[in-house]
Image 1: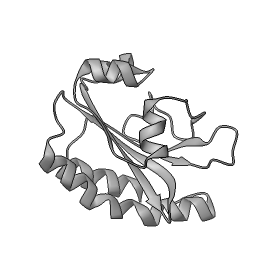
Image 2: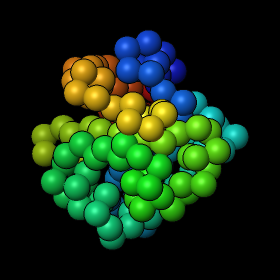
Image 3: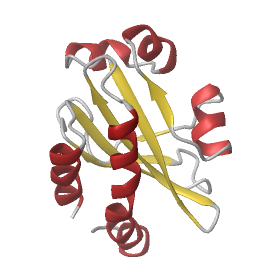
Image 4: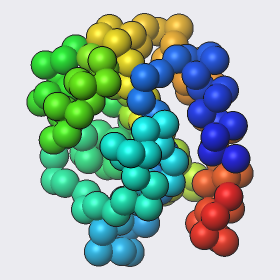
Length: 144
């Protein structure tokens, strides 16, 4: 199901890198990658801790979209900016997947610099509903 979500986002928003993560704050490493357009670089099932930084404050704390539209924004925000850059990505968008006030995960979309204009951002938000069913199935049953 996540592959279908990715295909829809590729068609309507476009990406060079696309990942979907689940977040479960009750776990020691609460972030788990559920889907990746580049599993060799960003493997499915990779777990990590939540950093205490501006990204976490904005996406997790305020439950707001995070946009980085330049390579320098990417470098300042993502520890793996060199890998992101190697894929030709100079911008990134992280959309929190929120249900009943809880961030269930994020959609993470990367493309060329200055890719995310208002039209693409609006489309990305409008399509967010596509990920709720597979996200909840994964949370309940461990897979979508």
